[in-house]
Length: 312
Length: 314
Image (tube, rainbow over all chains, first blue to last red):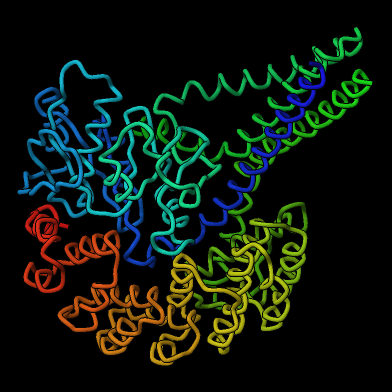
């Protein structure tokens, strides 16, 4: 029993160190590609990304999405004009949206798209607004899936990035994803997903189509060789501004407590307890290091948003 | 025995936790320094360089605190940023500063010390500095690196310092260039480092040179290359290149009603055809063109694409 526990502790410590290594490598790669300006402007026509937004109705968040420098990119926002008339009117007025004619694609299970709106402003031409009624009684997850399917049916590009109300895309996330896709031959990658921060996944349109739309176990259908895993944040939580400080504090306290308890257990001769607490210290230390390494990526977004609010 | 193992594990885990905690502390201090001290010093260096560039005397600017920890890298980054926004013009003074402070030699040592993506980043920085041609030979070992980014940025150093032999360097580059790498080469081309003459590139036997040639044709909208693009489409030995040529034809809005194009589309799989249809629709081709190129099964799909007003707005 003790041997198994020791092996388990070794495995946990090793896994924490390996994940940290991947995170640091991801951070270095991100810093490298941050200055690669050619990718945003000169990449082949084959890589385009449609961001599908469900539950995103504030102009600040839509502005943040439209800030991407990549040209072959669009943001499709799904909103219920009947359920949220004020928000809908605010968006159509702000972005000078006009209702456009649209013929539905039969690739995705779309239920009840009322209308499609596009901006007359050239600077917002990448924004598409879909008016779709929310079904009463459905869960938030079901509603998001239905919204994503509706948005996918009007999407123009070959890769789809679904976002919900809780998820904020980091500013350079689109360019980062494009760079990652551009590294591989066309069609070689079906899914790019990130494990750090809020989990997001960029999915090839055909994968979603073959699965009959968004839903559970969609990513499991994709063979492992066609998946690309990133160990860097592409998105954060929409309500993360307060949590960041608390999480930092909790991590520091966890590391210190783990050290103290390990020392105490070792002195008292409880070596099993000391080993467990030392493992906790390793994991907490790895998380603290990883968070600190990624701090400019994650915290920058929230600090910037707060200062923008202050300016306005 | 098992207790001894537990003791050894605890000591090792504690040591690892200490290292990680110290690493986190250093990362925090480095970040604080970057936001405070480094940001101020960077602004001072940039100011000094801008004053020297705008003055007629060509006097070497004074860089405060130069020689302290981290200042060489800071000055390299400032010069590289300046070169990228001046499109490589007025480099004489910057080059003089690099020679005087030995920044390129220091950068080369920095490249040697770094590993992985950090090394690639250092090479990318070196490529932006106006250095002499000896750097081309100095980065040759990095062309054999396992990290593709290190290999590629070593190539960009060679292209930047010795643009006269750019084609030879690209031709001898080990392995095929990815779409991202070709896009980066296009950025170098806009900075005036690569030649724009697309003809020799398209005629070359090197796959990399042909890909760069195709990218030039697409970027600069060179309609005269249509015939050569059609040859690529017709050449069945390299379907990847043929597909790139087909997309280039689309972005040039050339007529797609050619036998070569029709044959190539017949050989494409379902997903590739759909992707091409979306691209063709986005480029604004008429329904008539698609009817003649694609099979009847695809008709409802492309009709939806073409008739959607949303797309014509795009």
